[in-house]
Length: 209
Ligand code: AMP
Image (cartoon, rainbow, N blue to C red; front, side):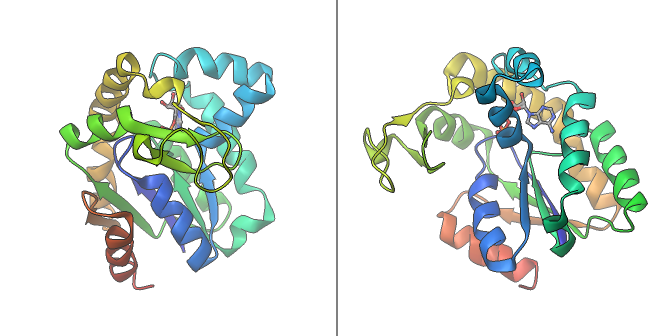
């Protein structure tokens, strides 16, 4: 099964993707993670991407599409994959459909993790991540990672001045994809304003897992 995850930044896509990846043996492709890796490695692509990410803007399509095409060539995607954070606009969605068709496959379901904007602002400002093991939590976890004890950090783009820009970009460019996938009869929606485990039970039910 090939799945696209839709939802505002902070809706909990990454958390649901991690659970699905484990249980359904799917490859997890997060363009945000791929870009953050390139930024940390200091590659030319990472340097270009960082200037957009810091402002809460989308990285240019050709950069992100290039990363995704390369990732889709890797053998672990044959067993099915979850795309998390891609596509983010209609141009990316149509390119993805064309690319998958060349590879003899297609998207089976677009899963919308639906959360109201006011809940999102609160979640993003309290989100904390572990730079060491990748754990995502919140200020409620305290200063250190509950999994590996490394210091928890705030993502640069979760700072208040960037959050508003990211939500505007989501509303303008990404939200229309809900209709794109509804039109293809692939849209599945879950209420994301519940505990991660409750959301996940619903996800499994809706995807017949
Ligand atoms: P995320 O972790 O998915 O919230 O992504 C963090 C940032 O990476 C976004 O705010 C964008 O600047 C960039 N990014 C991630 N995925 C994409 C994409 N599909 N298209 C353009 N920019 C992206």
